[in-house]
Length: 240
Image (cartoon, rainbow, N blue to C red):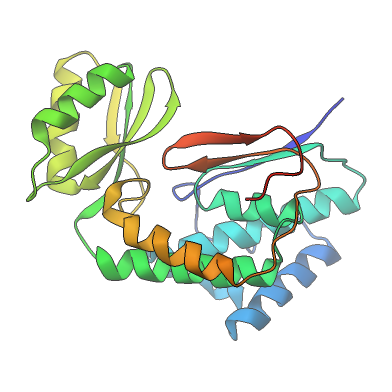
């Protein structure tokens, strides 16, 4: 049986998530390694108060993903592929040995800080289930303005679409989506407008940082979310 490791993005967090990880020495070593880079205890970032910050959320997800994957591998689980959504792509890259954990921590912290600096309040993500991409795109196009920007973000499935932007704009899209028959249309527990043009400057900054880091060819195939769509590497030769 082949096994793939899947790493979620922001929204999968919950209070106490780092304290509830499997009891394994490699988990402790991983959390200690991350804490050393941060110069503070990573375990402090999983409290209800801390998780109000995108920075804490993204670092906690990176830590839990890498620590859990390493524990599984130490117990004999052989991974043949990895996939990551949003910040989960960084954990996937670490497990695939395309990037070091230290560099991933630096990138994730920088990414989250820049996101929060650009849009500290009033922005985020929402999910629509039951409408297709064409329908959601049409609604978004009718609502989007410079004052209430909203964009189609992730195409998770043919009828599961994530939108990103201002809360005000997304609320209008969600209301219209419900009127058009969406089975589910609600805001997600994400405080920044990921995967849309509003964060293009953050992407540019990450590219610049990555250019100074030592990247390696992944050990095995991976799928990472890029600009709301999946990018697949069929062989380990492609870099993240």
